[in-house]
Image (cartoon, rainbow, N blue to C red; front, top):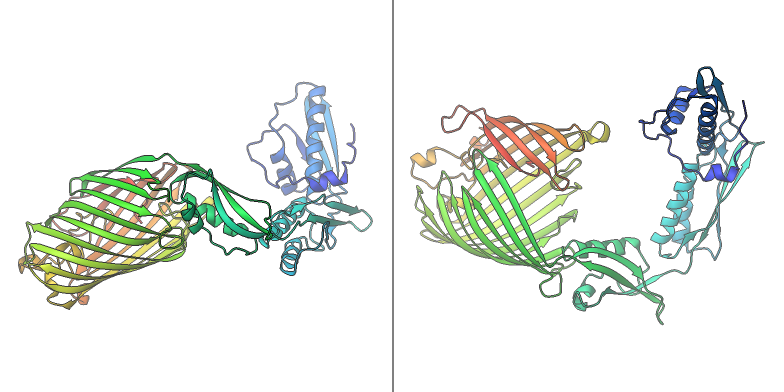
Length: 586
């Protein structure tokens, strides 16, 4: 039996081994002399080993385990601990005997600036970061390393771009059982930002890169400003990689920002498919030409071929053209819809300013001019030319649009429109929607999701019954009330009275529980309700659907397979509906 020598204090203080390592370690070592949690933590960090076959094997395994155990104990503040390895021959076995001793605590830490102290804001931020190493707290190495990292980040966030951490000094006082940490930093000069330029220089127009600059020349360096610069450029899709660096200071003492870019492929092709028993199969294809004119703009031509909808659309998007985080889009489309309530074919031109989805709060707006013909329609509107505008405000605190697990989305949309053709009128269409997501359990395995949507249209002039049918409200379908035919829920009496289909208002609500079995597979159960109505007195007469589904994680989005059952007794609906598509229902 041999007692291991004491490891160097500085080494133990610097080791930041995690308190819990992977639980799959399989070790033959047994431990005596410590509490259950300590034994479990040490056993979990030991490597896999086969049972010893000889005394020599047992001694080797015990000594290796003792070294790891002692290093971990020191990193947790047990500087007086002893770990004694023991090996037995018959049968061969390895054992550790642990005496923890007193757990050392921190003394008040100190900071030494090796090349001049920083300014007041940076100094205060650094002090706050180091203050997490509090006097009389357990002297854990991880706390020291985290405090040093936070202090360095605080210096950089306050303008000291070249700040570095020096060699920290750890003093262990065995008489008082205290550990004093002395942090050392070299701040460098306070950095002030100049202009931005891209390298290689021939990929983008200098004017476009200049428009991405989110600071004024002379502003103090900020990591957040450079991070936003990278995000604003990579979000355009024109580059596959972007990194930033500071150039040496110029004569004015300013440091230009160089953004190194790796361009994305000029052409991109995308293909999407969907299927439901209520809406049929569909294919969506897109071709995109990136960085068309050297300002990260993109020309996209998309086609939709589905049982209920066919269409072709071309659009030109100019990122950041309406300010940082806001792109302008110009386009034209031609499409046809074949629904139970009506058939429509038409063309449109449109222009919009679209806020980036990564913005927490943002407003989008635009205008659209369309000309449509309607067939198989009860009502007076067979032809309509509609000039409409829209304003859309969105507040999004989720982190992943296609599969949110936490946060909420609130959205309001207002569409003033003027319609002429068979009938002339002005009307206002408004919608409001809220979604909320809450995950519970370990690793967010269970996510509870809920949504509510409300819509209403008001005729400013003319008869609201003459609003074109595609601008009225409907419910039913995969993104509305699952289990019912697409857009099949609206006031039935309108057909009997010979009025244009659809309602003046709509109410929808959904609740869904999503369970993730592992990183690949998941399941969901849901309840949907909704209706379209002409009077507010009918707004509470909802049609309900229930169902369940499976989710398969494709990496970029979940594949959704849902089976829904309508609860209304209506001969027009099948007994169930199947939906297959990408992304969550909401």
